[in-house]
Length: 593
Image (cartoon, rainbow, N blue to C red):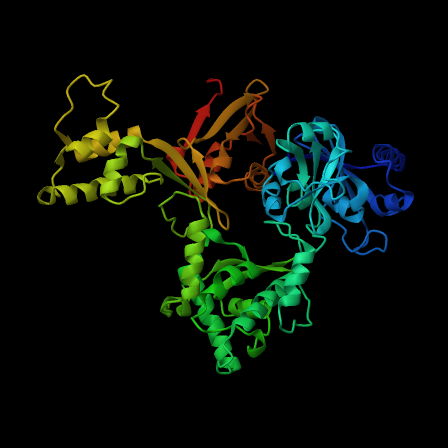
């Protein structure tokens, strides 16, 4: 429910009397907690309670502390509105604790235990299915599960809950259906928009946005690493890095020659340049420094080499990344204990002069990334200064199979218009090398099937024996299924079925024509968040702006409304995002005078 960022429609402070009523209502809803537990969650005389009304009809209650550290509340004090503690969701039956609250009192709700591998699906907003639930340890059957009951979810070996939801079955249903079907409808989970409104902390090292791991497993892995861990624990990036480099030190050949500080610094620079030139694209940025090191820089080291921070002048990742920034090889941003790489300077002299080398680790990492990606897209997106890109693509139909097989092309992949043109060009050159420059091409069985087979119903004449190249291309595209792919910096491409829906800009009258309003719809298709657009529009266009849901139960889109006629300003702004004019439609509904 909270996978996408909800719009905060209003916020206000609770009065003291309202706060007492809130605490009384919550005590009735969660009677298992004692007074000490409630003092940890909602202390009587500490902090303020802020109520946020969200666009999805939920109400979020946040505790805002005046101090950054307090013995009662712990070291976390929340985000802009404080730390989310409870959320009221009318659609799901009432009150739900946030993960921040559950980390203080894990026994607040009964829980389902699941596998670590299952957690990655729940962190993607999927519901919990019964086959992914561990049976109770006592007799292997649940006796206390009730339909509509609130429950949390934990990974076996990690006591901290990472999700909360509503039961979709009872104990009787579980036994009756043989542990098949849905166990829990997810309401809120670690990493969703409610979590992001807080301080975005995590309770232990087993938590990550990709998967929740068992603490016992992590402890065992750390115990098996036979290397000295650095005493400095400045931030989480150094912890991740220490574990990775320690494992690498174990793999090092006993007879390897010692390395000086200068040699190690040079090796680190070469690894960064190799990764930047061969593996990292601008659309993947910004990126956490620890992720860039573990997934790109480290695998880019030359064969039979080991990175040892103790033998470098930097001693740790943060200092190394800052040295790159100081030399203007990249641009960094530091915040909340994490370093982020914003951009890579591809015009730098070192980058331009660097010649990539062969690296077995780099190649295996690249192959592994490709093998785990189910994205059937051939189109490589060029660097576009970190701006989201939308690319029109088409999927071949069944009668193009023989044409693609002749050229050893993937029939299940998506192709751009240029790639379809190349497919035709390559086939013609292969089949008719003497006529490769001719505008008209003779149709053989393969081309005839690809263009006409199963599509002769509307033809008034016989199938021609010769066709123009451009006509062949247009007819081939008209038979293919249109798609469009959204590329965003630092994220996986998003594939959507259907042609690109253009952005709609509507200008309307208000107050009998004395005032006007501009409505903008469909900007989400191009990776633009409506809430961010509305906030920036207020400053850029000097007008009031707001976000409203579009009518229709099945329509989950929203539109941005700006006061006044700002259509021309909006168009100029959209073009800065790389959106061409043919994907922008303007409709003027003002009455003509």
